[in-house]
Length: 519
Image (cartoon, rainbow, N blue to C red; front, side, top):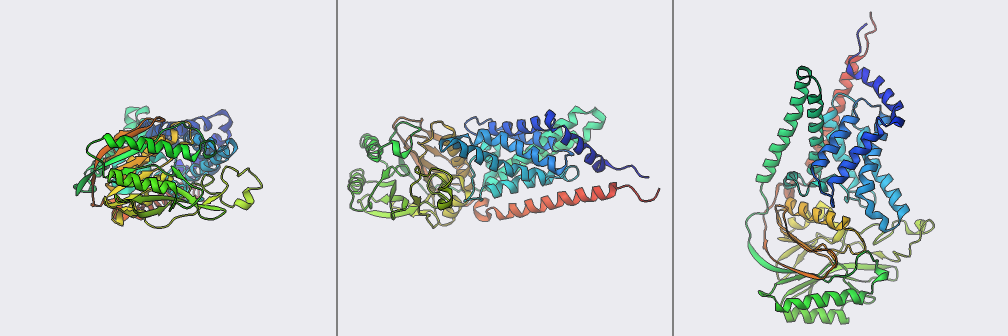
């Protein structure tokens, strides 16, 4: 009778590893992999640890049964999101626990979709990429925050966003992990037996390095059409307080006071950007004292003034808008936020969830906006990403394809006491700028306000808390990157094909390893 090949032995080994779960033979490496991935994310930002974490998980999944792969992936997700999504406890701690446990299921799904032996490498990369693609869109519009691609904003891989956006960045992290794990495993063996394995790992890493070079040389937003002087106004204030703890008049007054500093600056800015929802009203904007003051400010500075406004739409809903005042004081454009924050700006299934939790912190729901996010202003066509929207590649790509020549991000992260969400937001700024080939400016009431160029370099960044005014001269551009042209679909199709190819190889290997019926 023929001796079973490697895949057959893998099934027996998988049973042994499954029984060893309680002793940490699977649990500890899996958790460690997730922690390494989390430490690659802002505010830590140690991007090489993302590849190390991906490599550790790839190694640990070797030879495991599907059930054990599920738990290994879920534990890795726990390690990643318990750190990467710890900000969620600002809403409530039990909600954060549930969120982290559910988000970790995406890691578990990717692990189950990874074959135990043959075809593992392409399937592992594809499964991780597809799981992240689903996580970024479902449920309730998805949650890109905490995605492994954000950990690469300060590393060389970020240039791949110009080709394939966050999905290609995600795939590169998993592919880099495969390369690292394969190289290390080869080096641990004897020189004769380990050389082919080490060589495969080195080839993967060299291929990834060459892809980075291609990304860096790929078309970006093109040469500047012209440049404009921009002022970003951060009114300042205490962080970690929710809307009920800070009077809207206090927030508005802080913004007005900081804006007065512009009267002494030369040259005068042609665009002044305020943050999201710093004008919070209990009545319509038009005809309000705040509208009159904004009109007066735009005329005095002879500038285009943009600010976030919230105003009631009905007894149970409100509008979260970005409003543009022209230099003559007229309102010339508005845009309503499209991607609302679940359980922050609206409550899904409110009537049901109201029986399970106190919803007094979110008494009304934001009306979902529509459109590309393009604002046509006296300064030029601007692509608008409101706060949470900066984590969604589709928002910037849609606005750029509609004609946006500069990206603006009015945001508000003041309710978070730590810098975790602000730093992840700046990382998202960098990736958005690279993938669209556009400069980007962000305004936040208590930070971070920032200026980012199309190479992903953060040229200006405020500090958290105090009032500040950043000024910068930023170019307007109209060229397209490869990602602007093609979007996510080619990479999703490629991932599906790679996943299928990996499993086909696994099944062929398993079939060939079965013992013969004839002795």
